[in-house]
Length: 314
Image 1 (spheres, rainbow, N blue to C red):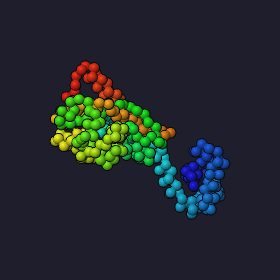
Image 2: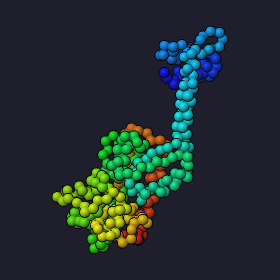
Image 3: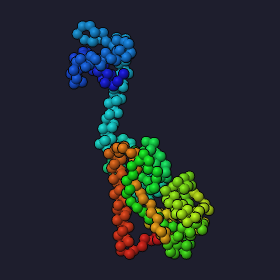
Image 4: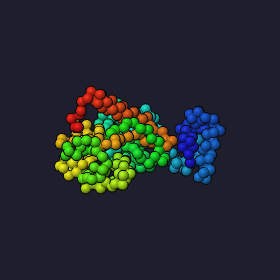
């Protein structure tokens, strides 16, 4: 049973003949007859009594008609919904985002998108980049915004922005000069993303640098969220890593100082999608907004650097 066969069946009922159904559907009369014959042969039951000028339904045809109309109408509504989503009028889209998206782009992007497309539901899953990768691969998200590096098998990766990673401490003497990996390994360190630990892209970069020097970074405390780590840093429990976007935000706690790494460390923010997939226009618009916000942030940071001014968070 196919949707085309059911459309021919409904058209024949509504027009009372195969000839009328053919005109309604814009196909030849023999094609309508063949579609309905295949439907009858599939179930081994006649659907019409072919006598007189007008078709009459058999018992089997009468049983099928309600279901057929429901199926055809549902298919038409589904098609309309996809057409409207293609035009960004309504629907729902899902995008995976890095956990600290709020510091980079999330409020500005959501505000702008909602203003432009008030009837499109935007679902943003703020998880660790590692989980976003898994969600994109599994098809739960159309695309994702992540921090590199990530496992890129089955993925296409489009870098957007590089943001420097800093070391943060409540003790100004520990960040009075660029920080070495040796200093980080000596601790104490408070690290976040406990669930994913060294699978987290930024932590992985730091760990690899330590391993190259025969060192091991063992945090005194691991927590799930950046905000919790920063509060512990503020209380002097230990030091942590933060991106420049976090350190320069209004939400960055007072009393914490930062310094770059002696060997500069960067987070690269990128868009990922499944290989050979096509993103919907709605997702493309969101991704374009993310890129625009990140470029503006980068340009603003460059202007501050060129002027010689230092953000208060530093």
